[in-house]
Amino acid sequence: MSQKLPDITKNLPEWYQEIIYQAELADQSPVRGCIVIRPYGNDIWESIKGILDKKIKDSGHKNAIFPLLIPESFFKKEAQHVEGFAPELAIVTHAGGKLLAEPLVVRPTSETMVHYMFAQWIRSWRDLPLKINQWANVVRWEMRPRAFLRTTEFFWQEGHTAHATHQEASDEALLMLGHYKDLAENYLAIPVITGRKSEGEKFPGADITYTFEGFMPDAKALQMGTSHMLSQSFAHAFEMKFQDKEGKVAYPFLTSWGATTRLVGALVMTHGDNKGLVLPPKIAPIQIVIVPIYKTEEDKALVMAVAEKIKAQLPELRVLIDTDDQKTPGNKFYHWELRGVPVRIEIGPRDLANNQVTVADRLGIAKTQVLVDEVASYTKEQLISIQKTMFYKALDRQKAQMVRKETLEDIVAVKETNMVTTGFCGARACEAVLKQHTLSIRCLLDETTFGTCFNCDTKNASDCIVARSY
Image (tube, rainbow, N blue to C red; front, side, top):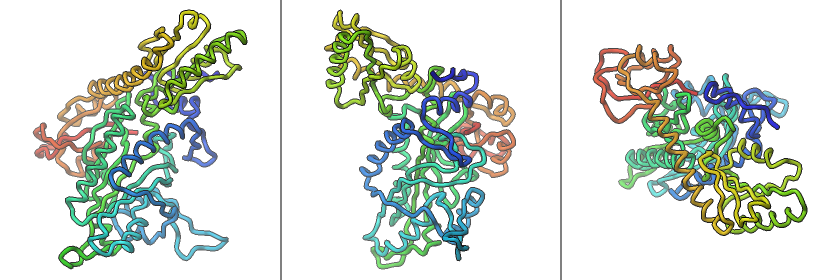
């Protein structure tokens, strides 16, 4: 049996680090900053990936695969891009026993490679819009790794599109932001706040970066994904030209957007408790686990027959019958609670004598005796209820943690327990002051309810959210 988890209410980071390994989501690798994603962790990622991939394809994008290695010169074509990524790059200088004529960068993101290819493919307005997505791994040299949340190598999807007009590109960036918000809230059960990144936080080379921010139980923010309005800077850098409808030479407007395996970490941290993971039914690799309880072979045959019958009545759900005879029922309950399975059905001879089974939910709200013929309909309704309950529980916590403060002094005073909405003038100097207090602007909001900036007497240009972050 696994060792007892740290108290999540007293030390969330320590709890998080322990549950990742105890629940067999990941394991440490011999390469610093990298993890091995184990089957159960990969099952969760594949659930997320399947939902998001359908959204991407349904909105007119095609999946492609681009090279892992990118010529170093590509990164020097866009000045802000290379400056922003330089400290994080891993560079290959030798291959085949020889010094390379040009070093190759291990992909930190694919804008440069994709845009090089777009420049070969786009010739006319008829070639637009061009909408490509890639599922891939990337490498960014991480100084403070934390499994799923920050790793040197991580997995993601990165979308890249080219459009004839600025409006079309802007609509695209906001469309994908909306898809991400829907994924987070309606599938991961994580309430998020969307908005624009500040100048100091936006993607290198982007005109506008949109973000969807989750807020964890310890009031730290987690950037869960971004959507960038790149405009035309990369198009000019890669000589990406096309003939428009008037026969003139024009440059397309570009976007890029991505979400990563960080979503697994967000899921774990948002919903977990002192028993382990709590997984929303729409994402859980196993939605219902059936635990047969018996002592004799005669009881086993009777119990297993009912277990198989119930599973057969739920073909659209992910149901597992735990047939491990080496564990006691108590050990099985602990095992599946640790892994966050939403619903557990217990079937024993005494239950069946009354033509019923016991159904327990992972949230600990109900443990109910249900007639065998009603189990299928009952558990389906329970899964829907659990999904909603998890979202609103997280939303209530987020609302309770969010406070309004007008000055830097007041923000710093509550930073350990709260996220803060405040006013911001937009100046990089005021933004930099936050770094001295391990704070950052998580996103700018489309409203101005404060009079002045939190750090100076300048008129407020945009309300913003300030918080510590992972």
